[in-house]
Length: 333
Image (cartoon, rainbow, N blue to C red; front, side, top):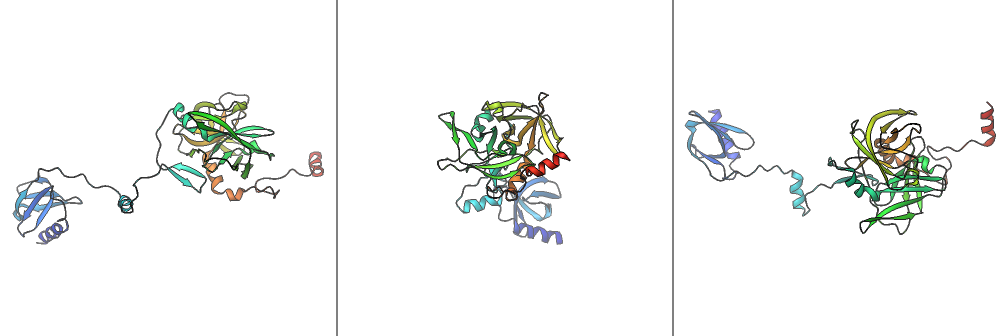
């Protein structure tokens, strides 16, 4: 008797279902709509969407089966209903911007060839020039913030950045000379710069990926200006993810790294930055190293702690040379 009462309650709950499935007429003038899964001499099993009911044959007067196909289950998340109610399209953006400085993909990107990726990423890789030399860098957002190595700009006050804008299917070089140092970490070899030229357009930027998600042997490639040879692309694999060098862990890669590559991006085959190339072993081949992008994200997320000021000679993570008298005493010791 209790089972019969439960069925009647369940029938009233699911009476809203569309009559495109099977309908069972019961003795108590109630009906249940669902899909008949099995019919036996003493019972009938019915799928009502959220559960399966088993109904005794002696409670069923009639089974009416519909020839119309059942509609597919409605699995759209609640956010879609909210978006439609607000009159906005239901989609997720490709990128998720963090702190206004950098962006990451909100879903795994497909693997692509280096040739395809280079064509898309070319505008976001720049050349950083100083009176003492040159290096590479990459743009983080359309406002002109960019990353490079600290040693590329160390001791320099005149910095220019060469950007390669796309025009008519080709890249045209433009030099920006109003470049400001935003934050530095000498010991992490990281520097955040900003292009402040008044006529600067919105810049193309890169996505930051994850070095932790890389596997040894996975393909990577670098874009930079080794020895001043701009727009140079080198390809290789990730040799190891945890190479200890000078107290830190680096990515080791067979992608060729040379002076001038410093500060440039190391990409995975999804087009995401996974590291910043910063050094090589000069007496070996295929022994290049890059700072993992996780260190870059930490630096950017805490950039206020590394803020640079021309008016403050005691900037965090930047120390002046000792006076000559002290230096001489240290040498004598």
